[in-house]
Amino acid sequence: MNYIKILLDSTYILPSFGIEVEGLGEEDIIKLKIAGIEGKVKFYCLSVTWIEIIGKVHRMIKKYKVDVKDIIDSAVKSLLESGFYEWITPSSQAVLTAFKLRMLGHRDNIDNLLYASSLENKMIFLTMDKNLVEFLKEHGYSIENVMDHQKLFKKLY
Image (cartoon, rainbow, N blue to C red; front, side):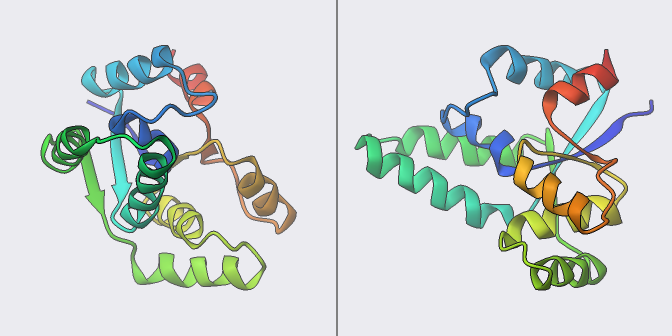
């Protein structure tokens, strides 16, 4: 079966830890899961995204002073062991492209690696980062493969 390869920004991984993301509702999360279960999409995650995820989850724990050890344990196991997500590492070409983006002024190295890896692997980069999209457009990079979940839903349904 043909499926669309989707590389996830950390925004789409955070709900696994019980973290609400503005603009990404429960219905959206369910639609994404169903698309994966039905084989319409295959979700990929970049290994370096853990740097961002760990930091964001830690900040939320400190901010709300909650004990989420059980949630963290189950989220990590689900993300790494369920087979629902395939974890990949950036290629040397993706790293070089990420360097170029950084040298042009885009300071989010994880996003740079995600974008570059999505290009390299012919994937849709699923992100809600409008600043990244604007930066890429301003510097002549293609944004054809960059979209948020709403645009993806239009493509799928």
